[in-house]
Amino acid sequence: MNRSNAEYKKYADSHAKPSPIVANCIKAFFIGGIICTLGQLLFLVYSGLGMAENNARALVSVSLIFLAVLLTGLDLFDNIAKVGGAGTLVPITGFANAVVSPAIDTKAEGWILGVGAKLFTIAGPVILYGTLASVIYGVVYYIVTLVMGMI
Amino acid sequence: MGKKTLRFENAPVIFSSASVVGKKEKEGPLSDYFDMHDPSDKFGLKTFEQAESEMQRTALNLALSKAKARPEDIEAVFAGDLMNQCTGSSYGLASFGIPYFGLYGACSTAAEGLMLSAMTVDRGVFLTAAAVSSSHNSSAERQFRFPLEYGSQRPPTAQWTATAAAAFLIGRKEDGRKGCAAITEALPGRIVDKGITDANNMGAAMAPAAADTLLRYFIDEGHLPSDFDLIVTGDLGHEGHSICKELLSSEGLELGDIFSDCGIMLYDAKKQDTHSGGSGCGCSASVTAGYIMKGFADGKFKNVLLIGTGALMSPSSVQQGLSIAGIGHLVHLTSVS
Amino acid sequence: MEIFTGLLKAFVVGGLLCVIAQILIDKTKLTPARILVTYVVAGVALTGLGVYQPLVDFAGAGATVPLTGFGYTLAKGVEKAVTETGLLGAITGGLTATAAGITAAMTFGFIASVVFPSRPK
Image 1 (cartoon, rainbow over the protein chains, first blue to last red):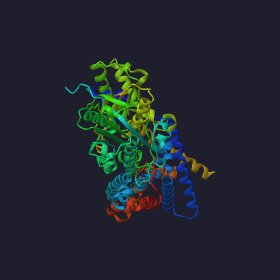
Image 2 (image 1 turned 90 degrees about the horizontal axis):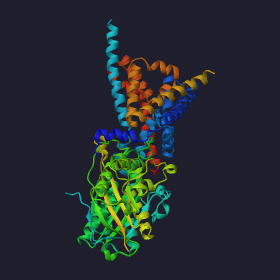
Image 3 (image 1 turned 90 degrees about the vertical axis):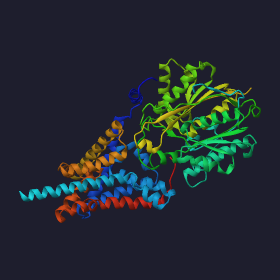
């Protein structure tokens, strides 16, 4: 009881049953792998239908997002994610789930400040920092190409 | 100063109690002890927040009807829940017209309400008082963690907020009868902060507070664990309870097999995927109103010690990285002969 | 056969990107939102450094479906827009290229909120 806070924190951390990391990684590998394989399969189908590579990739994203949104609405996604962990989080399905799950939840608070605002609770930071990084990269890319052009 | 256990010479009694739970709690090991449940968790209402208020209203109504009492017979109600500004309690109890005190003690709210009821009834401030508390898994998840359908993994130390509410009616000794429990002692908790910042390990944050109160009671004041049939914390969960045991052992206090935890008792950890066990204002409240009060009625319990443990944090304090303080309120229940 | 190896590559690379995140979650207690942000920003950075394009060429959807791929799309979009319109492209390129994903998520998300009820766990 007379431990310092730092000592107690260390003790509590060592006491805590660790997450089953190996099992989690295996599950994440398979579930994440399967989602990406499905993406590749869809890509082949869309390309086969004569779509340009960029458009086919975009439609793959749209398809996987649709699937994740549907599974979330049917109350199934969180059960898959409980097993899959990062396997469902990291693919675009995790992004879609992060958009739709607060939207479903916050209907009670209204369409504007409920659904409208909370839709971005988790996805907002992803869009913000992703876009920000791309703007910084764009400026760097512009300067680099300018300098390269002068040489 | 402030270290002494309060002794209630007039031994106020809990003359009625009732519990209302959700689906998961009804499927747990204590299923038979609860008065009412709703498999949809919504109790006929549109939102989970409203459902939580309805659970409080139902629990108090049931407790009143069991005692054939009317709201006018109760002079004060001490109530709390987990939602912002205690709205679960204020909306749930508005229609009764009973003078109302809103509490926030997180999982310790039931013990805090019992303690305040006993204090006021013992000193004759009120002739009768009620202690009501609730939590709802869905309203708490929304407020403290993630949206309900959000896919995430809970670490093994995470606790599961119970969907449960309970009401207790406390009156003078004369209101009691054989099979009731009297509140004979109480030891208010102190805020103990040992620097835990992980909201997924509230058990570790609360364990030192529970240990602090238990050590003050048993070591400083010399009470004997052998005088009790059950010493129960509410709700440290598996993780926190085991830490609490170790903390007590290191100070030379062994409570043995009679030492348990409401969060451990409420769910079947293996089958119900509740990880470290139950938590929330409704957890220790419903276990006490259901299981423990039944034990007194059956003559199984003569003396029970309830240590309501609360994690005193908010979503903002967690996001700001502040550590989570805990509190442990002790209430001594004795059978009425 | 070529199709099969393509699928296998997507499976393995996609799976491994998920495993890295799983280790981060379990070892560092990073919240899922932080993982997502980290992955997108990492995707932009790795594409800028020229590391990610070879991975996309190798694994296809195994590299584009994980959120690092979202960052890859942002970066590629910016490159294209800067080449075409100069500095203004740094502002327009990212969201133009990722418009499909973001708009789909918002649209489907909104429709789902209309259609599906909120359920207890």
